[in-house]
Image (cartoon, rainbow, N blue to C red; front, side):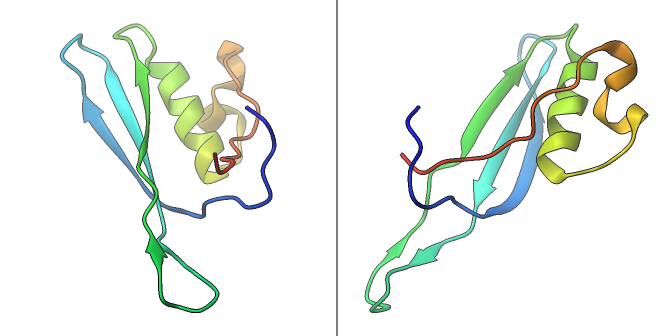
Length: 90
């Protein structure tokens, strides 16, 4: 994915059980107003799927997305630490 000028600002996350026994994490973003205020864009949520054996990876992803610090929160002990999440507008 090429770098873009603007990023979406995270509004909230949703975590849902998946049919495969794992979980789906949805990133929901804040609405953006145009400079004139005439238009509002509402970015589609991004979905990340984790299998039934990937609970630590899902928690590491969630902790990193929210900026939660600490070895246990980010799954560092399990070697599952991810790079910090940055959403770039497409």
